[in-house]
Length: 255
Length: 357
Image 1 (tube, each protein chain N blue to C red):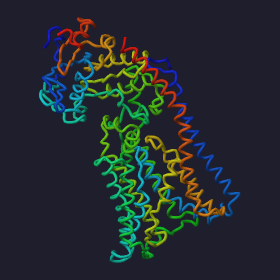
Image 2: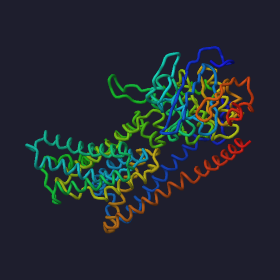
Image 3: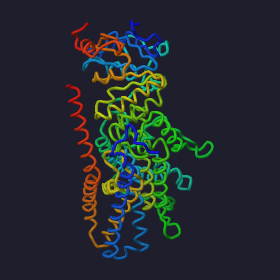
Image 4: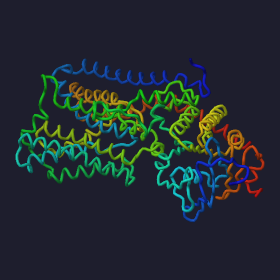
């Protein structure tokens, strides 16, 4: 473990992960630890391998070499649903919600609560139970949505992203990964999502944040992992580093 | 207690009211269209308000409705099924030929088998549509256009282009009129409409259908097995076409190669479009499809009663399709798209500034 990092055991370890797409080496022996109750930011220039690493952890890509450890035990993720069943939730920047469904449905999609119409009868959606659950989940995360029964397309970009994050937080048991969650948002909305990330972290979940914005990274992250040219070049404690140093690692002016 | 929360947004506060307004205005427009049509036909058409015309229109409209319900499911997933009318023809002819030529007898057991064969033919060909659209990844337009051609051709091969008379034992399924006012087709169509409504609103199947039509990639990432679901949707649309096919053959006690004509396709799509089922997927209700069917069916029979030659019907329906899509676009997108575009441009600008700083 790199010096200066927290001395608790990591909940997720990506160990010496390599991934190639044809002749292009996307990840080369990258090792990264994620800790419960801490935000780890993954930074690096475009093409550094951030999204590939997230997708490996999300089960969307398999890794060519290396191992993933969850609570110290090796796991194999064959599909995104494998990752989900292990409590790993991913929130993609643009593809996180179904705009024509209402907030409740979006939070519960693929994890619907159903009830039988009569014993052994057909299963129908239990909307009132889901509405109660959704209300509680959003209240716990201090997310304020005027109505949970309108299609998501009527909500603002920030509210939509908040619902997407809430969906992740609601179902994650170990890790929430956010791929540039604030990229399409305005200044105020960005701040609300950052606050939301901190609330998710306080629940004891490990958070992985992919971001291009260093001010935002320094605002919420405990640890910073820097990728450059598909390799990990630095693993820093954000309290013990500066923006200049991180930029140095990202651009290669600092080794 | 409503404290303005951390993510409160001025536009979203009235989101609920806005949706209600939009839904209400859509419904209002549709009902107004029905009222205008009924008034015009009532005044200009002789016997528009007669039992005879009701039976005519209702029987005709029921077939359209059953096809339109299947088309609604497909369009909600942001697809289109151009083959449903052809599948109706194919299912009807296969069922009719079975009873006329291949069945050991024409008793009520064989009639039941005939009905099952008709629906199964529709479901199987619909399944094939779904397979081609998802596994072979051919756009729905082309996949179902190919199926339209294939099904139409198979009908001609099977019948040699000649109508085949079907035993009378099938007639009760297509000719009964209950209590003097309710043709059996109406009962079947209402049953199908209630079934599709329940499926869309009370089950996970409906939720997945809207989710896929909303954003197929997002739906996949959220864990929906989109391939499997789309195959089910196309198969169900095919099965409904099978129901319509059996009803049509039973009504005329003839398996005709002309049942799957383009008019039926045109009418079914018109019913969906007039009913506000968005061709982009994800938006629309069964109630809309029902109202759309009422408009199409009463327009067709109403024009006949007004003495307009039947050749003009398709011209009218064609124009109505284009006009109602245009009106939909005016109503939905103009206001909202513009707003979202402005918001997006604004946030892109802010983002660019943020990155460069």
